[in-house]
Length: 96
Length: 149
Image 1 (cartoon, each protein chain N blue to C red):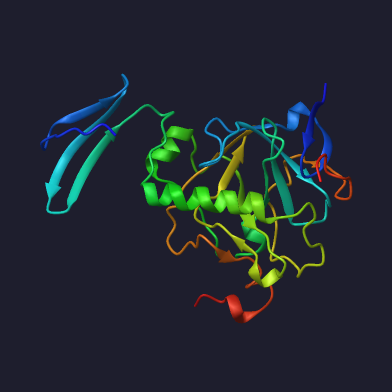
Image 2 (spheres, rainbow over the protein chains, first blue to last red):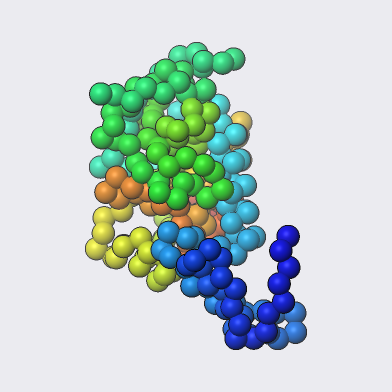
């Protein structure tokens, strides 16, 4: 890992267009300012990690068929404008 | 011409290219920039967000409003600006679902909903207070057990 010492008010540049400023240092806390193009997503690591883990858990947990005998929904409006592809849940997966 | 994928979950699937949703940033922590919604039962509340680039990647999603009466999404101003969204943009909201053998153990991630509009999708961090990373999905529709108050 690259290890750089910076003082308050100094910056680090990643590539040509991501600038990280040291705004404030106070005890155990460092306040950073991040200036990056719109295409660069910036997360606190713990939030990024927990969402990544939930996404992976969602992708791994389910079988091909989800229960259909369900309690009545409260309401629904999302997705009705979106077209989905109907698949056969009983069709054998390509690998078993 | 239909896009054909060999899904590890559903076998051979043909997808109308017009139904493809572009995820320029993928899903958080997962790869893939093109997804499509699949359903094995059009009456089911669950849809499969299936990656087209990776035939082994698909995850169940649902409309959070079916299950959570007071669910809201709030964006950081920076995210709204980055995505070109404002309150007038009609957006479909989905949450990812972790399935289980028991309905009572199904959870949904209220904290990182997936927004879809104009053929593109983005998973964002919800700034609304009180969201749960693993919200019991059926608590509210099955009775008072899920009442947060």
